[in-house]
Image (cartoon, rainbow, N blue to C red; front, side, top):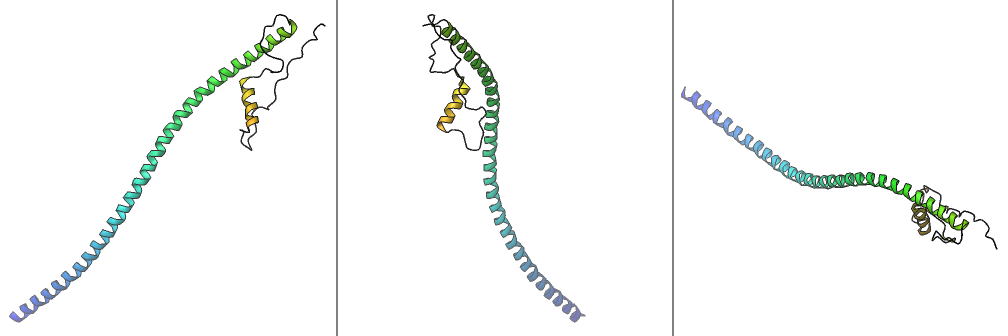
Length: 157
């Protein structure tokens, strides 16, 4: 019996040695693969950090644009009010010119006959046309037409 027990022990030892060597090879391959995965994950971490920085900049830009949009909305209401005031003042200037032309010795207005009355919008449109500031392909909102001075009645000679 000793021989059979001895043979069994030797067979078990041989199998254990083979199993230990095999698991060692698999263990080393797994370790090498894990190192490659860790290196890859480090590269991905750097890339994600770069993307995150870009997203933070984009978020700040969006916040600034949102603030500018709110300010622009308030500026549009102010612009509408100023446009109506400008139109009213232009009308008043025309009335004063009419009074001035009707009663020449009174001289109510300072406007010359050579300077036609125009609103700020008309002036901005005219200046944009002169400077070529209007981008090509965009039609102008209003035609650049200067207001015609009102005809003056003939003065007595």
